[in-house]
Length: 189
Image (tube, rainbow, N blue to C red; front, top):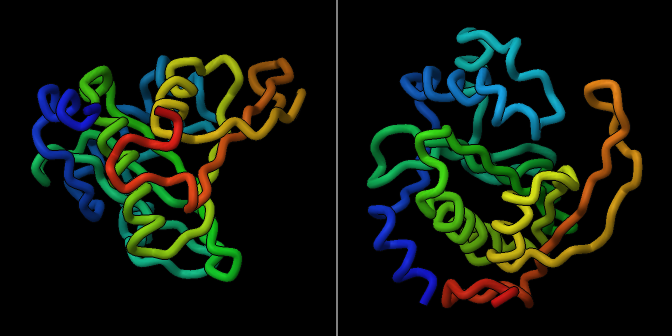
């Protein structure tokens, strides 16, 4: 049922390879202070040259020890964000999930639909056993998304990061292949 609600909000979400013309959209979210408050790296300092280098190096075929990155789009068009499977371990068959959307794309169901698609790819196409993520404890909006997608809370690393002059805690979530449901209902619903 969730898929019907998402489709009413968005056109067809398509994950495609990153392109050079996506650089401006990437820089937009990298320089957005509201979006950056939930990140551990200083993306605000990234330049167009940095972003173009990232796009050139972004793979979309799983390779051990590498990451794959896709543009989140509606119908394959305008870049609205990036979704990734990072730190691929093909022997253990696991990968770290990450997503970021431009402000104009938030609140429309795109993150949910894109996450469902990358989980399908991870478990069905790439044969992953586990997909995991970590999130700052105070990022409740992201946590709601992850739980709605079926990620299972696995624990917390207390005072794990030192950001902005204070210690921050990371929550860890994961999903196993056996918990993934192909019908789009997620593991948590």
